[in-house]
Length: 235
Image (tube, rainbow, N blue to C red; front, side, top):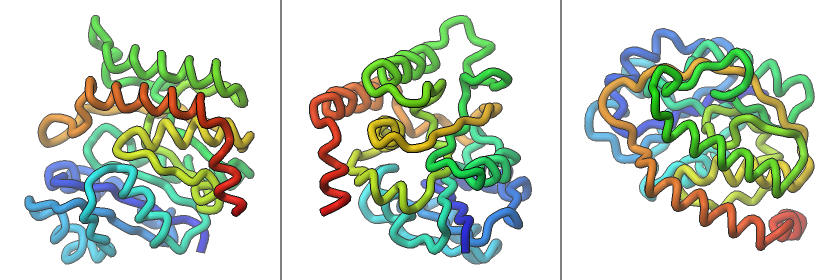
């Protein structure tokens, strides 16, 4: 078994109803849903109507969800997808195809040539600008392959690479940590351009200012800690 598609959900019933018919499930060998205490029918829709294995997450946070997925998945490649409308399901086979070329990590970039960011039509692009600043700093401090989007969670990674990175960040900061540590470990990284759509079903659960502070703290931590995580992985 090679390809595991991981759906990350928390009260995403509206997004699921819109996205599930568009997801190319046939391109994955295994489909898992990591759900954090949904109360809107998301779990029932996934398990009962679609027959998708739902893993119940008790500790909050995207970091915890990704670690649970890695522990449970049987596939060699883990593709993380949030069915909230922002992420284009048509990119799932593209991500799997790209990592099969021999890469360790492939990110769907909202800032690469040919991509579209949710804020592109807005005058003030606060979230976009912040993301690009953090990506610039990651490229500056950690070198390796230049990335255009280190923070987007829509990505695929080899399970062995995920384990080697010893990711311990909480919440949305785990995606930035994954990009930084992949750079530190000199892993083979690629990106594909993606079209970020508008969110379906309410406001984003990622609050920009608190998430920004966590990401900044993580950046400082990773600058100071160097490659200690590699020693832990080899222990």
